[in-house]
Image 1 (tube, helix red, strand yellow):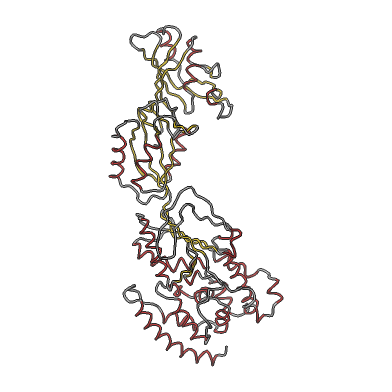
Image 2: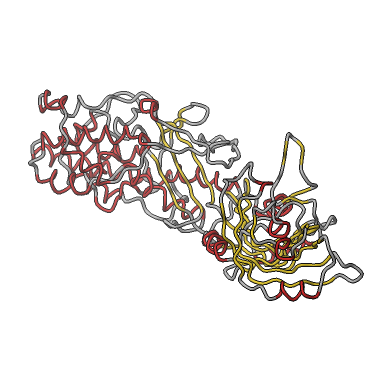
Length: 554
């Protein structure tokens, strides 16, 4: 376009800008204290090559995509109250372009930066400004009832957008690659669709949620866009935790049973990826006349992306130590042929009392080792970690004390807890580190086939750091590999039982992973030495208690 025409349109644009400013401020009065930068936007548009802007608009590129492709300074087109119609009117007036027909979806961003999408009911939703989109998301976060102190915004878009943008930029490069504006702006300052969306809605989300955005936040807001034209490679994958469906009229919907996971087709891409593809070859473009490069590579879009909204908190962890007072309680839920083994489980007692207080979706129980169902866990207790998925509330210290008191005061007195507290993900690391180094102490009720002698008591007490060799016990051989394990018995002590010559209490401290029952009776010679072989008689274990699990990190 000639300079004369451009100069004439500048004066027209100034008048339009003033009118748009008045109308825009009136329509959004009271919704934001910040003034809409219409004059700055007008000045930015006037710095663009008009003929290229017209070409982009003519092939269905939306106003925000035009400005982001040119790397418009300060992202002024991302202002939360700046509507699509405001930007469009300025672009059209400055360039002299007149749009035809009704609303048209962007052929590059597929409507994402027009805040148009298809909801869970397959109905098209149109919004005017970033603030409208942020308000919808904010309401959904509040409806879910999350207690948050910050958030991280994640956006996933179809690969189709990258492909469309690649074709467009390649066409621009072929026709205008030698122009200064192309070298200085398009190649170096073009911003990706997902980054523009994040810039546009992050600030109003911070205002509406009254918290700051942070890349390391525990609370995540995820927007996943997909498109039917790119659906062949689209993947949905269950993450193991559920979401509640939110019945709202705003169009966005939350995931019910599955978390949306995107594959290569729905990958997040960066500005570098967008820029680098401008050098790729394209047979279609090479065969076309340069004047057609803007029209041929990109198909017009008839339907918008499908949008799935997900808000969730990364897992929180509560650690502590549990005590098991019953010989009929398993550590985890144990079902065989649809029949429960034992009257309860440690996992269920603790998890069912903590989960409601955190208002989470589910929980996972992890412990530092395990005891058999008929073995009590006494003394200091066994370290455990409870992983709460998508907790809507992080319990305070006061709440933690209430939970601990509630569990310890249960009528059946099957399970107790101590030292309960909230920890970060480092709790998992501490658990794993401690497991490798821990020592365990036991008290076993033992019967032997002959009367216990004083020499027996003395000889047992002198055995310190004794190495034993254990083959996988026969009782677990059906589910564990047939291996030989070398373990250490650190110390032992015999406590006589008044009035009994063949029963006694054996106190011992061993390396983690030692099979205590087999160490007592020998497991038909599969454990060497054993209490039976040391005393030279038959030995049987009648009852067993764990009295201490030494883990300094827990």
